[in-house]
Length: 500
Image (cartoon, rainbow, N blue to C red; front, side):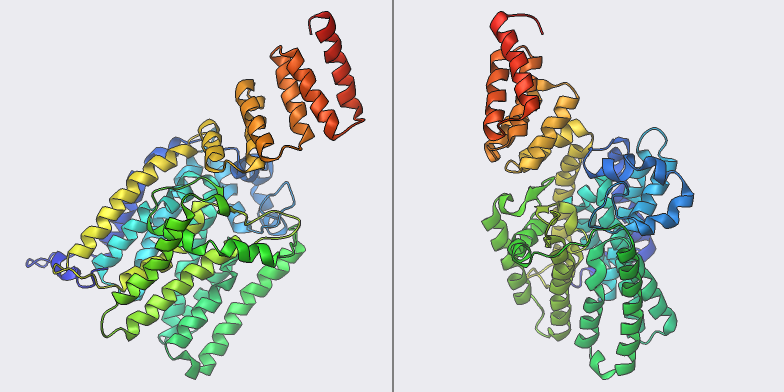
């Protein structure tokens, strides 16, 4: 933000923090902020299917190469292919012991690594050292990171950051005259990113854009070599994915475009992260208009704060916008047959956030003091840290998580049903009854839910209510033998008052 603030932080005595010392301080910040998550359990959403259900398979290191033949949900066919994410879960299973301490520890480690990499990423674009450090503090404390750290499945985004940022760093070295070694390292880290999360498949287009923006169109040999070393990892990834049990999903163009209408709102949420959610459908995100306006105003405001000699800054500003869109837009894709991309999770902002920070770094704030921009960034980081700390507590265990999840997504039928099933499993029938009735308010024509309500009423001794719910179930599926038999039995008990 304040471009020359480094001059203020370098004293007459010559004191200056080295890049390594700054990274060490950033790592300490990550562990101080998220140390409490080490003692968290699991939420029983995706983490159960990723870590607990396939635990026996993951416990055997000889199964490592089989990970490349399976989708991310090892015991179920799915549409996501992330073998390196599953490889980290393989380490978790062997090192967790009876709890999940190692899983949460490694989440903090990956986040700390991501924070250090964002610092070096910004420095690549000639962002001043302490400005880059202040922006890295914002990245470290942002609620998008809180999800990526506190929720074990959020690791897919920190893992993506651990590979994408080095890939770009080595690409930039190659662009600036580096040899084959840097190109090979770019290709290697890009390949690792592909096997971590699918949204990285568009990453080479970002690199090509940056190459052309800096006069790379005259270097035909360099472009050709870059394309060859970008296509090879994509071919390998595509072939292995096709040979795996991953489901190929046909895209729904209309639904995808509908989701992308909310991109300004997501940009606004990244800028003012006061209301993080566990999950919500795009249409039910809180205060959509406010966040959309904020997201649209930000690039306009930054543009007018670019320095007068703004050609170089303008290129970085445009590239920052493209980085944000290229990494966020694929997460909003929708497909036929399998529902994905319909709900929003804050951790999806993790890597795209780098683009917004790069944009912000180009602005020259209209303050007399060169130090003011850094102070503003650090105050914002403190605000983000307080929000993130509070938000991370919702991932402590499944009891807290599910209550908050339904609150964040009040119109999501499936979440209400899952919450009801979970409470019924724990024999908390009052809570189960509440969630099932919430689900019926969303989708009234659900006979199975009436059957669930009937069994809960029966277990609690409310025989007449159980009879009423079973009759409602039969209205939707007349002739169902099991329901008819159960209705006859309970009706007989209601008639003669006999015990169950």
